[in-house]
Length: 249
Image 1 (spheres, rainbow, N blue to C red):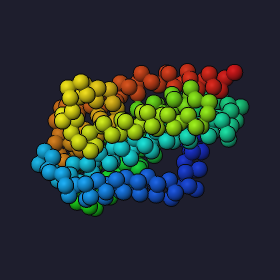
Image 2 (spheres, one colour):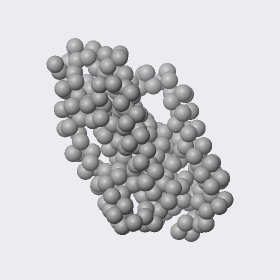
Image 3 (cartoon, rainbow, N blue to C red):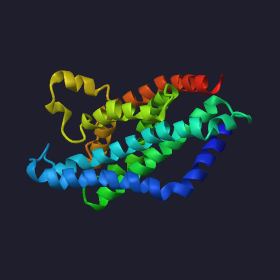
Image 4 (cartoon, rainbow, N blue to C red):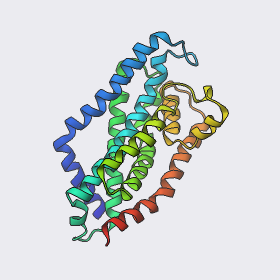
């Protein structure tokens, strides 16, 4: 299957650069966790019976997963498309645009799951995981991985300049991250903001990761996962259409 062969190609490249990739996605969340959890946390009262670092630690897993998928399908996909011309070379063979998009999404989802697992391992060592349900988190991260990969590759499909990814990071990823419930409960915000949070994909990922890390399993988690899946289903044909316009002249 062409998609799996392209995915294998991406993995072959990853084997050569994995250390640098993982270090970046390991150090940055660890810095946030240390600065916010131990630094700011010393001045913040308990939240829902949790210390501040216990509260934000699962959110770091979700955010690391989001950034891994997003950067792979923005900068990574854009470089393969515009600079390396990798996608164009693939189309010379028995490969379709759908295969290319599916392989990039699969690769970004793999990285999303992997880097989320790295941070999960860190917070487990630090004693911030309270339940064995946390072992399911890496499997769950496949869902937000798909969602953020598709959001990113759709933006890549309408972008003609790599500098324009600054808009995606600054105007979408950063606000999504800051107002996702990682650092403070969404319920502390005004009612209209709580409603808007439901349109923020990472909010749903944070809620599931935190619940699993703490063992607070409830039917509402299926709703959060369902929202993420719905976004992914809606975006899939759009991603293929936008990349087709870029590749098929």
